[in-house]
Every structure is written in C-alpha cells, then in structure tokens.
Length: 219
Ligand code: ADP
Ligand code: MG
Image 1 (cartoon, protein in one colour):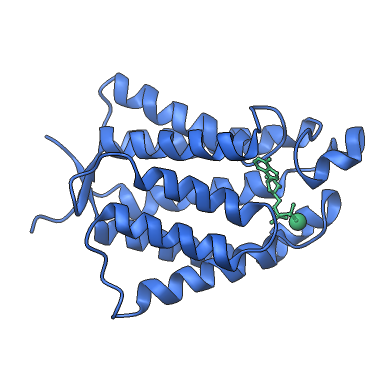
Image 2: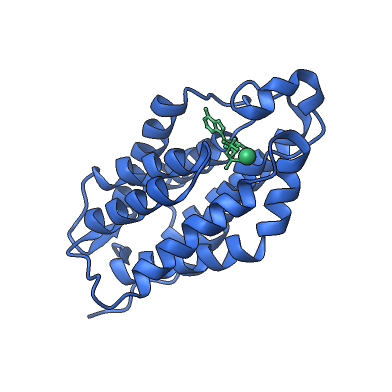
C-alpha cells in the first residue's frame, strides 16, 4: 500500500514544530549562550511564529506541496536573523524543488525532498558531518529515511528511524569541536556543549513522527 503525506499533514507538522520551538526557546537560547551569542531561541521562535501566522491565515491557500515549502522558506529567510534562518530557509526552498504529486507526497518523494533540502543546506553552509552544526542531526536523519525506504519499511518506521538518528546526531555534537559558525571561534572550548542548531533540527524530526506517521485520511 502506497502511503502518502498530505499537504494538510505537512501544515500540521510545521504548526507543531512552531509549538515545540516556542516551548524550547529558553533551552535553545541557553545552548547558544554557551557557545554562540544566545539568540538561537529568539531567532527560531520569531521565524516559526511568522510561519504559524501565515499557515493560519485563511487567505493563504497553497496550491501544492512545493508552494507550501517555498512559503515556509521565504518566511524563515526574511524573519530569522542569524545563520540558522537562511540555512533552514534553504533547506525548505530546495526541498520544494524536488518532485511531488501536487497536494501529496509518498515516502520516496518525501525522502527525496529531505535529501534535496540537506544538499542545498550543505551547499550554502559548507558544513559536513562532525562540524558541530544542524547538519549533524539532519544528515543522519535523512540517511536513516533512505535506509528505511531501501529496505521497504513503512512511513511510520522510516520517520521513527529518522527521529532516533537525529537525536543521536544531536547528542554527538556535545563531544566534538565546532568547525563552522560562531561556535568555531571557541575552538576546543566548544567541546562539551550541545549544538543549538542540531537541537532545533532534532525537533523537526521529533514533530514529524507525531504529525506525519498516521496514514493520510482518504479523501
Ligand atoms: P548565529 O550563529 O548567526 O547567531 P543562530 O544562533 O540562530 O545564528 O544559529 C546557530 C546555529 O546555526 C548553530 O548552532 C549551527 O547549528 C548552525 N550553523 C551555523 N553555521 C552553520 C553552517 N555553516 N552550516 C550549517 N549550520 C550552521
Ligand atoms: Mg546565535
């Protein structure tokens, strides 16, 4: 049975992500205070509040999944100061360019969207695995989705694997030195602190499990 994710579910995902970011604002700021400039929580909260506003605005009907992700991307790029806004923006912008079925995506298409997003984010930010950035959560999550897809797993299993991989990647950032972004100025002193961007990225996969795991309702 082909399992699909609808545009409505994708909207719910981003609304849920906005809630989680708002709930975790202080924690994200605290993490950024240790190795950056203490604004990651504020930056992400501001951006996701704007995304939520646009999603809840009845005037804003999105014709397809691509238009939806493009809108999220443009909102993040324009509303979030700092490095993370344009990077998350690029992630969603590039995800939007990958093939989809209008108002829905199946597991192979959704996985490809995430891969496109990750590739775009890396082209823009030039961060690789173990540079202690959001890539350390997103890349293992995307790879876990790809592995689940290749072995014929269900959408729910693939999303759960992505969440688990993102969590391990996030936790792995504690023990490594930052090579990219503001935290890299600290050199070895960045070791021992969890990366704020990897933390906000983990939340994206945590909320995906809740919002996207159930099969889309039949229309
Ligand atoms: P700023 O560093 O400008 O204050 P934020 O505090 O909002 O921006 O975001 C910091 C996060 O951005 C870091 O924790 C890291 O995960 C991520 N980041 C920084 N530079 C890069 C990069 N080049 N590639 C990927 N992620 C990056
Ligand atoms: Mg910062």
